[in-house]
Image 1 (tube, rainbow, N blue to C red):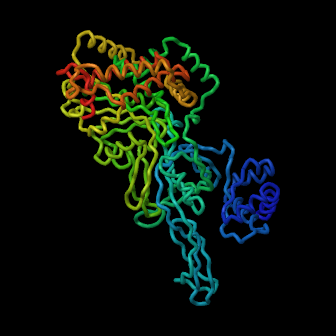
Image 2: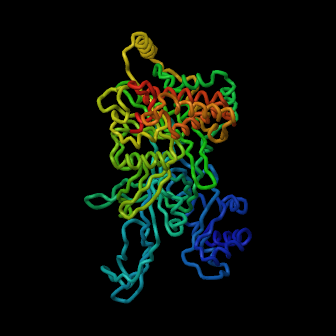
Image 3: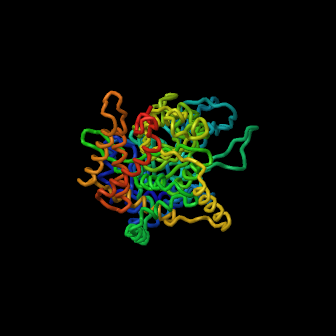
Length: 601
């Protein structure tokens, strides 16, 4: 199909389907218009096929067709944007190959990095000093192109008359963790945005950590060698035609009818709590209380937004502190595979944007770019932080904000931004003196500020204590695994566990019953008023922060049953876990009482 035929057919399509909307858009001063690909496909399947195979020329034909209407005002560089592209055009970043170059494709991902918006030349006019002829040169690549000769025969320097500039921006888009198999590293690709796609209203939708759907054309760009010339290898980028934000939900995890039946079957099992607990890191013997808490953390509590604007987080943060070789890292790595939308980062290697966010140089546009770290990329999911005590001072400050406000603020190199970090955190830290000492306050044992430690709902010591009976069981467990050479599989397989968690979080928002409120209230009041009657020296065994943690634990317990009501049983389970935590890290051996100040100061 030649260009004239394409223009004619696009004119007919726009006339029939979009005439009034198109004129209204131009009347409002907008320089772009979005058309539905499925409507075009129904109107003219042949033209739609041309659009997929030769997108650049076909989109240009559509833009020329717009100029043939009797427009209310003249338009310059009017753009046609495409939405609702067929799902078979969607491609994973890791599957992009040379045969996709110059084709229209759609990809989903998380914005890892976004550069400053910078002007870019798209065309330039030159004048020939000999004959005065004007020469227009389209600027398609990275290198500024000048004419080599004039029609009059002159070669050499030409005078630059003018440049046509447009705003441009580069994004680095990374595969979302929920689309990866366990242990796979996410792949990245550069996406270039121009003109209306970098307007302030669009820029808000492409901040680092945002999940987006990119419709664009795959392009190859030459790699320039240091010694001059061009490499035989090429890099690839996507020239964006349209960007759509994707709502952050667990719906992206595909749950079939068969999966739903499996989940309901699990829920009907009276031993479901024990089964889930045994499914957490089955190669590690013991630590049942910690594993049960990790199951409840996976399910999480319910986020509450009140009319006055206050927000109570539903995410539950857990810190494991303990002796070397006590399997803390193994627990974290297992949870990063078991949790949907999870990221794992080690504190020692969490420099730059590793944990929170950073400002980095953008080599393409020669400006600054904002790069998201693990906490931002895991927004709406889970982040496992190993060796928390090794993170930088700067990251500690940002992490404090992330745990309390669920945001990360950046103010560097002319970039000011606030990124969302609604992330559940499971962290591990090592005591300063090597081993955990139950007689010392925990804040004195970890190289972390008390204010940061205090942001965790639950803190568990993971201890390695000599005990003949326990040591025999651990040795038998480990040696049996080594002898069989088989990996000990969880009772609930990881793929099903992920779907179970996603299904519960997506569909179940349990509310406290009167019975649950009564149980939690009684425990809270009784614990706060136990012990000595001398008010001035009385330790504070529990604070309102732990009260909120109790509610989140109880809500997580109800979600396991897919129940919309938090019962007394759920409240008692939450109380038991919190009590275990307080006895481990908040018990004062001198007074024989629980003192919350042993954790928070």
